[in-house]
Image 1 (cartoon, rainbow, N blue to C red):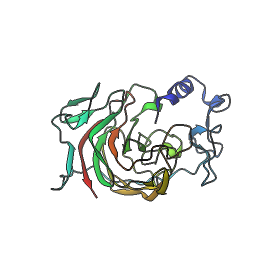
Image 2: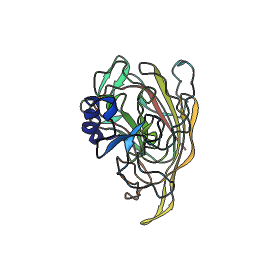
Image 3: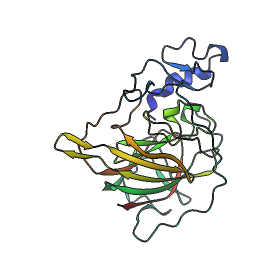
Image 4: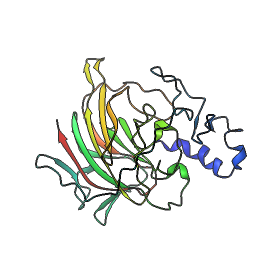
Amino acid sequence: MTRSVLPALSLLLLAPAAALGATSPELIQARNGSGYFGYKDTPKLPWCDWLVHDPDRPAPPRVDPGPAGPSVVPPADAVVLFSGRDASAWRSPNDWKAEGGHLVSGNVKLSSREEFGDIQLHLEWQSPANFPGPWSDQGNNGVFLMGLYEIQVFDSHSVKIYPDGACGAVYGQTPPRVEAARPAGQWQSYDIIFTAPRFEGERLVTPARVTVFLNGVLVQHETEIRGETGHRRLPAYTQKRGTGPVTLGGHGCPVRFRNIWVRRL
């Protein structure tokens, strides 16, 4: 999720509960009584009945994924991007840091040096408990496949963000089937199967698709990715390529990552 949402969301923290959504020209509460926040001045998604980041979109039901287990051992053919020692597999870590066996996020995106197309990706992360920042940044990060297509990382266990911004969403496009995030402070895991888009020159032949398991629970199944993801805008395939880095978001919330590896498919 991009940081451009933060000023509007931060203002809501100062508003009385009765006024939330009533006076803001942008960010509002759902009209269906669910309590979710989102936007009603964004474009309509052409493949469904909802707007981008629509708070009235049906929220996924919650499923308890059970307690976190031990870290998964990478298979023999995996490309290990982070094993707990250093960030050498990543380009210009900037304000990211390797600390206590974890990769701790900073304010800017972090991309792998290697580029990938079709992959199986595993990673584990932990959102900070009792984060003092605005609730709009609680556990805010993301996994950008090919650096372009974001699978959301967010503390939607406690924050009622718009459904297409919940943890496990194809950001701004498709909510997760269920809400399977654990509370902040606990380790979470993603297992992602990604099929890159295919192009013939400038023509899109087949769109990207993704299957996502959040904490072992299926939240996306062969979901079509309809273009590069973004905040408050419709997706589009503007970059006609079939490979790119694994990229992690940076929003100033110190989300910790560990055990990141990729298998080329």
